[in-house]
Amino acid sequence: MRVAVGVSGGADSVALLRALAEAAPEIGLVLSVAHVQHGIRGAESERDAEFVQELAERLGLEFALHRVDTPAVARTQKMSLEEAARELRYAWFRSLLAEGKADAVATAHTLDDQAETVVHRVLRGAWTEGLGGIHPVIACPRGVILRPFLQLRRAEIEAYLREMGQSWREDATNADTAFTRNRIRHELLPQLAEFNPRIAEQFANLAAIARDEESWWEAELQRLLPGLVLPGRPVRGGGRAVSTHPDEGSVGMKLERLRGMAPALRRRVLRAAAEQLRCGLSFEQTERLMAMCGADSNTGAPRKQQLTAELRAERTARELRLVREAAPAQRETAETFELPIPGEVTGLGVTLRARLVGEADGIPAAILRTPRPWDRVKLKYSRSAKPLKEIFERMGVGAEARREWPVVEWEGRLVWMREVVAEAEDVPFAVEVISTS
Image (cartoon, rainbow, N blue to C red; front, side):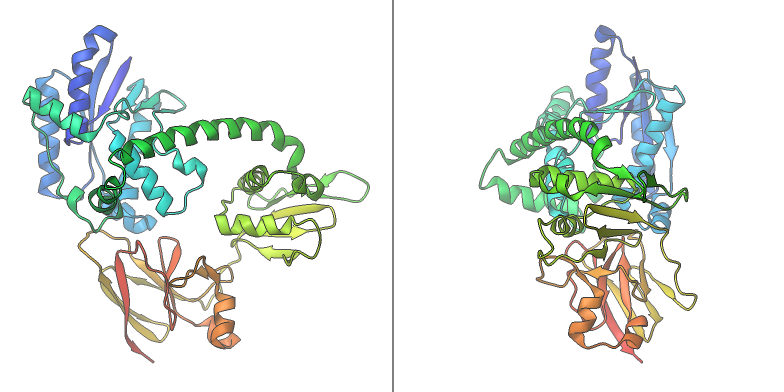
């Protein structure tokens, strides 16, 4: 097997390379070294690449270097630096497999990485599939991505390297607690370990359980969905009408069958139905659909409601239908203004300043804009995000003023709204009003 080892220069990946190089002759591996220069840390990144290349040459292995501009991609795609780096890294790994340059790519994720991932996803409101964390094996169209170190602790790996006298590179950004994952690693998990010293293992065990649960549910849904989630809408005389528009579509589910299901199954069916229309649902949106499946018309749930910009739910006497339509075009007069982080912007009658909370570089810009019909914002201390219509009604804001009311969007969610205290947890910056007009 030809295995490309992803090596950043850190302790975990260096240890993986050394361990595989030692085992390769016995188990029949042909190794190469793959390093991504993310363009984030300047000269330090160059020294990382040089270190990895020298290590590959010392071990007599082929070395491949891939350079990317992560900050630029993060800005244009409105992603965090971590997300953009991961996307770029794995896109290259998959291309190595697709081009037949390797049969597998090995990465050095550890049990500690697994625990941090599960905690991070819990904090962000993951579904059960998200709790599966980092998968040991990812099948690709050609080849696989492997994580051989998922059962090992980071401390064990560093001890292994010290014993053999192998150095490694330290990434200073791994200690920067401006990043949520680093706060989890250096602050939250150590606090949880005071309650249970084996907390990292417990989160890794939870991930293993969640992966097996998801595997079973996936097979069960594949069995149930074809006869349950029906494409299109019913027409008089029998049959169903299906839209041919590439950005539109609908599915229907018999209410009688939905009501007879256990909540766990019904929730998964509803989410799978939305996914068939290429729409993802949050927990809150799914619960709104669950309410529409009530046993009678007195549940308080509306017969129609807009779930997202493109997805609408409708309840008839017999069916719950999900309808996906092309997103409505923005009004020609609607304006958007880029808010650099850190930086200032003037527009929609306000001048705003984005001030960093902590130290971080390359944070994607936010957008100052006007409200959209499907917008929701989570108020500080509230349990869930609220529709802007509801908030405007509470504030007594008229229809005309609503159309030009300034809000700030960052990474797909509203993080600031004029005269409202929005929940800003996990937002690495604060928005301040400099002046109004």
